[in-house]
Image (tube, rainbow, N blue to C red; front, side, top):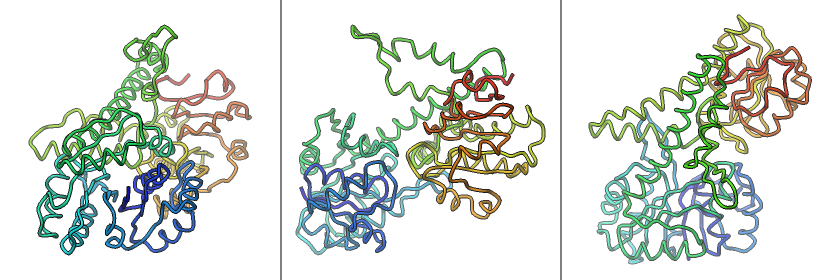
Length: 447
């Protein structure tokens, strides 16, 4: 199929490249000429594992290209995927980019007899596609639904694992408002053999939000339980969670042994969720509920716990060690999760900010996200030393904080940590492996 993807962020670029890899003819549209030039040269402007190799492959096969010309790209397309950003603005979703994109597509439709299915790939609150997007398309084109198609196809991509998630999905949600768009989306995803959920666009939108809200709720309830374990004492929250997830409803027992579903990784105490999805999506869903007169008590609590969680690191260190002024502190991990350079809503921003507030001597390391972190914290970056060799910095540090669950930091157990304080905010290492250090974490009272 001929597909146009509008937007070349994490969702748009990954979707476009993966669809091309499955045999579709894909054009990715971006307003930034430098980004378009990079993509056509085989150089992605975002970091995603496996993306560079796959991009070069689909460019070589002539199944993928990038352009700044939206109208030219949709002249022969059967589907236009809207994959622009939907950031949070004062807790509510900002749909300005989606609106603008729909208006531009509508302007093309006004002068063409070409039938195009416009499918929203961006994460938008329920009711957006069949009201706002449809309204912009109809107003700009002077045509009604039927003269064009309308659909909603949410993404379930984990940053760092996005290529794998797209190529080997657990489900594909096909939302549509007309039969032609349903048929086109069926053809688009024909190469994939997985569960396919066929619904209207509002249901497709809600599936995405419900999915993220429930996962975020798990993270916050586990962290709240962990905080209670710390307060009680002589209880390790990780032992508690191990006992919980052996419930066969979490870990089914089969004739071939017990299953360990990936959902169990959401039952490990830590310093909270971040990134481009969970925080803004939970805020957007809460805002929509409140606008409809619902109190949204659960989502308020989820966000409150998550906002407060990173702040407990410095509070715990001060309780254990006293004033942190001048204390040599090494922060390992700046991205919100491993294998990405994305620092949006990363716990590290709060952790480092707290350390600077108490005038600690701070050094930081991340294999991918250092430059984005510097941009995120602005002038405060001038008060931090960024290292290219974290193992060397361990000798310098009095305090080491593991802020991202990046596997290489587990090597900390084999380094000289005697007499140091280690705050393992991601429960990455076994306390017994650093017995010579003062080991701190969430859900386990300090010795």
